[in-house]
Image (cartoon, rainbow, N blue to C red; front, side, top):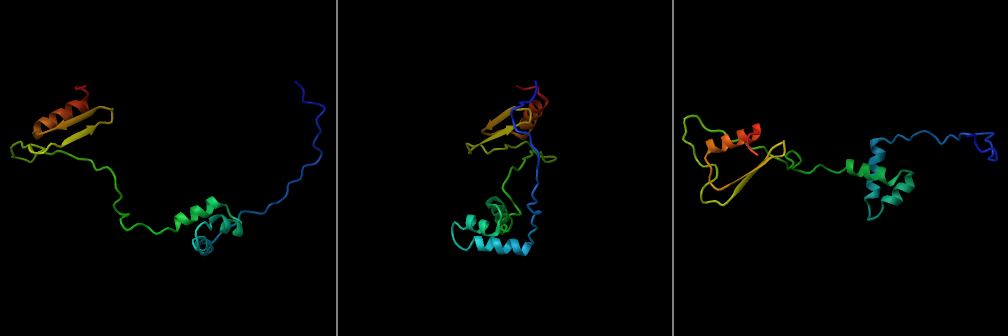
Length: 136
């Protein structure tokens, strides 16, 4: 299929130099960020004044935000291990008086929920069996 012959042919194409990317120093970025924080809703106006996008100014603001005091210990998942002490008698993992429960989810998608008192040997055998795929 031929191209449409009625359309105008491009005779001249001119590329206009828009300048190269601006490199902002850390001091300039900090000055712009502080100016945007002077009063509420100043992000767009400050970004227009300096010729940067709002998203770039918001990224600078996040990077200059002070670190939280408890940043060393972010909340997260803590794996639990049940290990029997050498020479000790099996003892309940969960005290009989508590009505708590433990839920273990394995990588294969299996899930084990334990409620009430369970001795360590039974728990270890059940976890090993579930991890090996013998229990379903």
